[in-house]
Length: 193
Image (tube, rainbow, N blue to C red; front, side):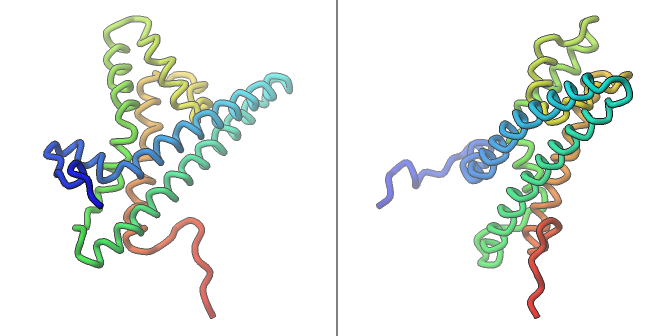
């Protein structure tokens, strides 16, 4: 049984893309939120431990941040690889055209609020002497996975926001392509004898 609204084709390409890929987009957003909270907890705990141990133990904070970032990238990999593997079935059946840029498109759509805030932070950095204030606070919380990288001196915050987006975009793109190809980079299947 189909309802009338299910048969209508959405004319807006952005809404159509969201409608067709909403599961993947929502999964990436949920992964980001969950790992953000996890990353904040781990980095803050490691920073507290490093402070208690004294000078020379700042590396502990970076280890905690690296663990959170690697977990985040692994979750992106798994989600986008599964999306690519599911789309491969549709491509083999002739129901879907191959698009190697699909992974980056989904990632960009899921991260569009962060990208918009990063653009605002970049503009505000050059317009106001004190930087972007509230936007920086939101972005530091939203990028809690990489909180340890903001402790590095000499790099303006807006530059760091752009840098920390690159690994997620790269992993989303490559994992979707490897999902289409049926190859696994992480968690490979055991070879049968």
